[in-house]
Length: 342
Image 1: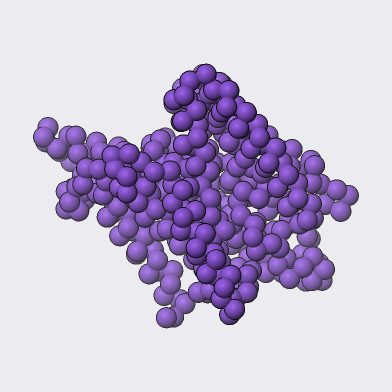
Image 2: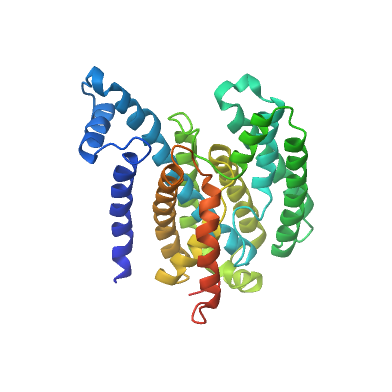
């Protein structure tokens, strides 16, 4: 298949996926009625009293949830590409910096201890984001040396602090005074879009769009960085400045995404490798394709989370791990595939 057709095909598939997935759930709605409700909500229209319940399900609950799934999937996959280039490690993903583990401390503190209760319905997102920023600062201060942010120090610092933040989270959950609070915190730690609403969508979407645009503008420098610091310096790249910028961007994007969706693993690890198999290692091509691929992937994973155990809901992180582990093992067995390359 012509690589130039991949982006428009994925864009069309994403639009179709969004439209179809909105009607799928415990209460199924035919695609014709789904479109009628969406058109009424977006462009104005009259909904009969008999259809008011289905309209609220489609437009107020599922539509923002599906859009947020697309945004989170696109953002996690894009951050995965950036982090793998930044630390030159094929096993790196958005969680290697310890940001998600730090955000988990904030989220569990809200659920179990009632911190940030003044933020109302935004308390969980606020707690997760503030903790993510705090963990980012800790990782930066510990990992930074006179030579800047080196890949090895970033990976080691992020991994070590991740275990520390996870231990804090475990202690908070273990000492939860109410079982329901502990269950809510654990469900969030495994990833969930159940709390999606129109208010949580704009900041996540703007962050992902801005971050992807920033990375695309520096795709040539990412190609140089992936060849090593010395090669990048020879090609005129200011490596310490670029790596510091990548760290700040990845930390901010990860913090925002974890704040609205919880800890969803394997998307940022698996999707970049799959996309490189299709388009090669050139970062401009990868960064054009991977957001669309990540968005499509998480939209359908979220559908599976809603319907496989209906009326209960499965944590999204469980499903992404169930898919990601065998896919990653298959990639490792393929002799023709080189991790981090084409």
